[in-house]
Image (cartoon, rainbow, N blue to C red; front, side, top):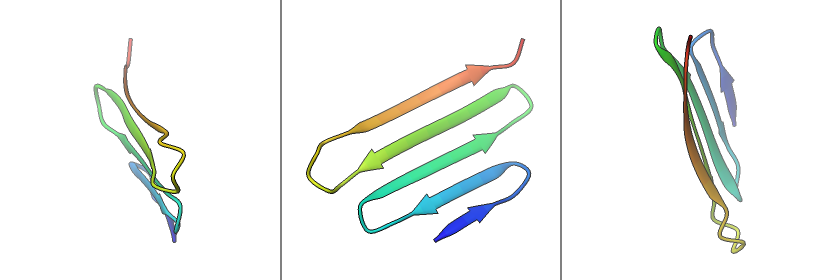
Length: 48
């Protein structure tokens, strides 16, 4: 499933989850992998 709007992007598969939220002050992203590889990341990017 993949949903993309101006402020939100959400992608869910059987192996991972990706979320990106764009706000006035910056962008928050997270990635989670549950396929057994143990990958995950979360970041905040502030607008200058």
